[in-house]
Length: 475
Image (cartoon, rainbow, N blue to C red; front, side, top):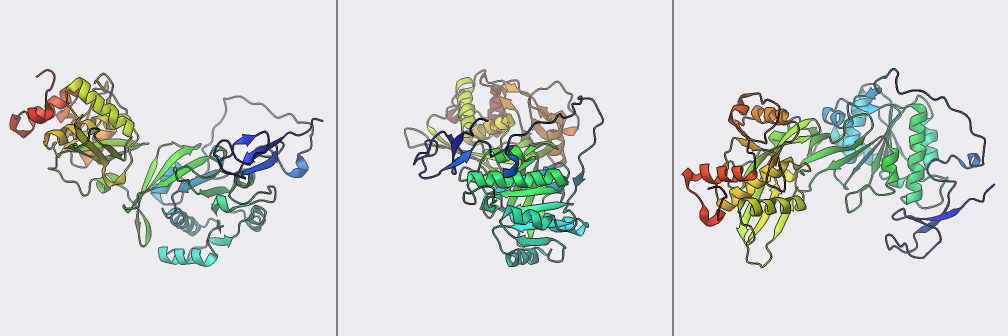
């Protein structure tokens, strides 16, 4: 029998070393390497099962066969059910991460109370708060009368023994995974080995019993869930609870979902009574919009299957510095640099002596490239001092050649804009036929030059702002 190989795992970053050292070469931390045998870890069983045994044959089957929908537990909170794909799947493990104080425990407390009122057995285990603190939160949220079973425990074996007593729970919430520890590992709670072993034990329980497990995870200063990244691969779904400290809204974003679509979001509003659902996020992000201000363009975006309208604000001001500033909030800074380069190279719009500030209103974050056209329109509007039409929405991707490229879900974006009272649209040309009243007033530029010429030529009574715009090719 071959001798088991010994390796050393960094408890800070999870990197593997073949020999012990005082300092981790990957993250630079001191005294974080812990010895671990390769027979343990992911995929290994208890200590008694680590001895070699003869394998058994499993039944092989084909791809064809009957398919059943995953059995779900709907919470009744529509925004949470949208993000999870229709509710919690029985026998699945869900990981929820977010910044401290963002509202993870509040959301899960409200979800636990809603499910308990439907007759489900819900167990809420906290490793960070005492039972009295959870009761205070429940009283503030007005859900203290629900039959949620509480416990304050951090040992995995004790938790499993507790929830195994009585009827099988439908949902188990563990807040948080970084505070749990198991007897199978010797390191301290929160380390890579303990988080991995504790998550594996709880996921094994979910798969074997059919109970849904929700793990709450802390995040690092970079915004990633703390601990080994392998935990995100082990679970069936990963949700991030996002929000800016100066804004009262919260976004529950789906990053991974084995039983539903990814990139879905649920929007909530934080109040003194807890989280309130926002069924129409577009009205929230456009609520304080100044229609006559230059440099503001309304972008029709998509989050999963949901269209969302949000205002993009740009400010272009003369710079006293040799290297102008480029500040971006809510969008990709590299994407802004690309749009500025295309405007200068193909449209002759000069930004080399101007500071450029770009902001997505409401603290919302945009990831899709379809915002290129709205950003370009806002930049040209701010540079020329000409306000864009208040009833117009913009979306489209810009290529490096200056062409406007087609984006997906054109009809859904236009339908959402028309529902909110917009009557005009600037969008790329597509093969599908546009429907609705807004399609009759849709301007579909073939290149970015057409959009710049339209903004400079049709606004301001036909006056050409040549002092600011410098020149427009083709005029």
